[in-house]
Length: 296
Image (cartoon, one colour):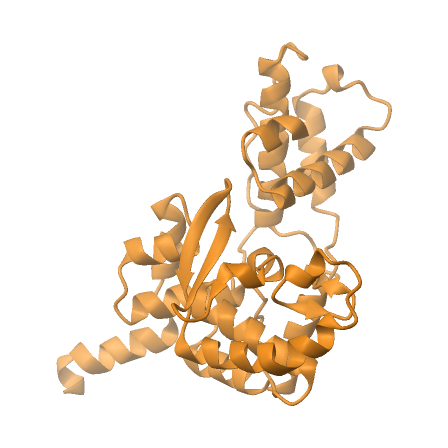
């Protein structure tokens, strides 16, 4: 099944995630034959998932469980079509949400400026981090796109990044003059110090480095929370993906077309982009002040 996913052009991270989910499901089944799995086993597994906690000590949310169920559905559909099983036990399974789930927090424009300005540019690590998060906010990049970005994929003169998007499609993404300023600072100073300690030549082609080579998602998330705490925003519920959400939401709020934002973020479906049209509190207030007759 994993080879089938690779053949469909899915990203390595997606296939790796499928492996993790399917291994957890296999551990749950124990010695039970996959051909004997029924509808009740899937229901029991979903119930089991609701008892698990993530690495932050919180119970898995409905969205996380839904993603895992999607992988299971794809796996059993493949088994069924390949005639490894007689019936598909996930065919009639739908996830009933356990209750209200908080929407993902999106940085306000004031908060994202506070966050970015809290990152100094004296130490090599901070020069790198400022360039990383400025580029993420400038262009709505995913963590995997940032950590895998190579120097040759960044055109400083044209201010464009060439990305490998989902499905191995190339994406041409512009970045701001502000992001360029901090990129140049990092390239002329901090990166030169990091690259000296990197032994693997393959890692030396990457734009953003640490002492060991490629930055991991876990490392970047740790740096993100460090700066959140520094500027007093750690209690607002922001996660690192909130930066990408902020890029899209702020662009739309300032008049960018939905089609442009879809292209920038690399969404294949416009419906995915439409979640960013939800008005933020500050936008509602601004529109109210502008258009309500009693305000004027």
